[in-house]
Length: 330
Image (cartoon, rainbow, N blue to C red; front, side):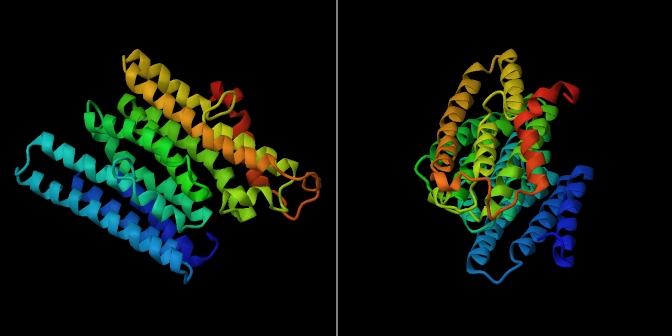
């Protein structure tokens, strides 16, 4: 996907949009970065003439355009003193939460994710969150709207994935749940937010690589795939448990740091809601792991049509054993 000139060009623009948002000194420059991000991601989606990709790109464009209109109109009105500071912060927060896919503005996220292949879903769930998170981190201090969105996102992401059998939809609701943790971390410190985001990306990367290479779309495919040997099965199980934040895997580290910091700030009731939502998400993570274990004996052999890439093995190693080395870089 990333080794043709067209994709390299638009992916470079994607990175450039993040650099514009980081270096901007006004809301208008930030809006330019957000728009460049959208206009560079849509051609990445539409690299093939496919009805699902076209539908996903149209939905994504309409939602992002709506959020951009709210963002720009409030920035213009605030520059002419038509809005007071509290109303301006609330409306800017709503537009950024809509771009991020946080609850209660989350409904577009699973619908767009269903029409994307796994490699593009990875971009949607990680890189596309960077710009809104950068701007939310500026206004997150003592912002009750972000706290409400964090709690709603955690519960919606947990409950929304319970009765779903499509893997991309399940992972989309999982991403909404992690948005709740990211928003909670942004209220504590930027360091915790970006630590959580980096570790979430490191864990999600081998999962999406495995699902993409095995061409898995539905939960039932995991019991019938001829490419599932014991190593593939083990990697899927351990990576899903790490994504759920179960110790002793790497995914436990950022959650534990956020829990400890939130308790020191007397945000105990909020963190209890986040912990309960994570326990619910573990249920459908275990569903995926359980389906990967339900493999007939003739598929447990070491021979497989699919050879695991070294990058997938390396990222899975980090996801499973990174907690042991966390003291070296935390």
